[in-house]
Image (cartoon, rainbow, N blue to C red; front, side, top):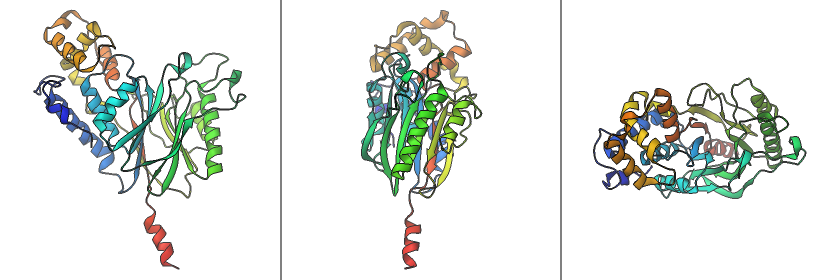
Length: 362
């Protein structure tokens, strides 16, 4: 369970329920989010199953600074998974802040920065609940043969993989953020998906172990070339539906190979976070603080001091002359949560009954 103790500390969160940033305001939205997550995951999951999540958290956290309340909402979502792959991580400190809210039963791994250019200075991370999942001491970045991609290039944002076990189920996750902008003569989206998928399929066959290809594939529709490349590599790809905040693009996927005979696919879903937090009808409530941030804050003016200054500026009414259109609010709330929605699958990991039934026949 995510930690909420700081919400009682008035030096961090003013008491009250009427304005963003107040403890009661945040608590009410966490309750809404918990109800949404309970309806989507908790109330439906099988006992002892595994929930694998993935989330591209937009510019986490190298763009518009996030409010402290946003970290609570992000932590609440991730806490309903057993393991989660994060893409587009820009700040190790932001992951550490998230881990503080998740608590000591959670652990994480994070890879090196992808550097400038196609790497976009991004990292990827695996966060996992140690009460549900344990690390099997294999972790690395996936490098493909020099001849695999046009120009002898590597995948723009190097895929990140690690081996885990939950119950009786051993698996390897490989997280990727496939290139979005395509340039003539450089690897295309489907090129990157193809080479990663083929390499993972080989490894799954060699190790006789399930490999899960997870993350932001930048697949726009179920019919585009990237999806075909994934399926041609031998991956089963559940239809998650649209995963962009706009509700139009199928960017994010959780695909797997080597599943047959090892576990059972149980369920899947996309979490519509904007049905619980940063609602459309809350635009006016967030107007002052959003405009205060936009006009006065820099990304380096961080966290509590940043939050308090923004609230003070909002109370001073400095936003009166600022334009605040619907499209700006939606862009701003994407900076608070993400322009991608979190996704998840459920897998069976407990085969003890079947095992005992086999023994009972001896």
